[in-house]
Image (tube, rainbow, N blue to C red; front, side, top):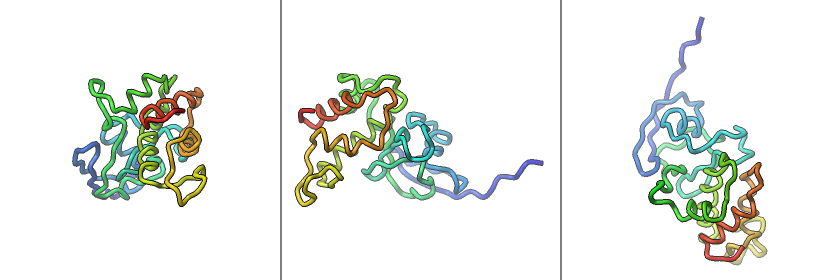
Length: 176
């Protein structure tokens, strides 16, 4: 005997600039809604525990691990995935910098790395301090140490970290 499907809840959000409406089991994560229901497979399921950052997307201008967030919690939110940052013919500056600086090797973590890197530079620009910020009353700067600290939740098993910081520094207009 199979278990009948449970109740669903409607959720509406804007994904990559497009209004989307889904009826979902309330237990579906944002990551699974994006990948399985909207076929946006750029965000990856790495650990499914919020420890690797492969699932990072930008929600209302801030980065989140989409594997740790239920889709129904994002009613009305603006969600940007790697697919919404740029296209092959018109790359986002961070995507272009990752190519120029070889900020990837196998590529599995790259979508999460790029989404996180874009959001990190916005956090710094918005004056949000981190653990690496020497004085939380000063505006943070896009230094290599500052960016490394902020990107520490995104794991690259291939070890392209220095190239990722170079790509971010390039976009930020600083030296790594």
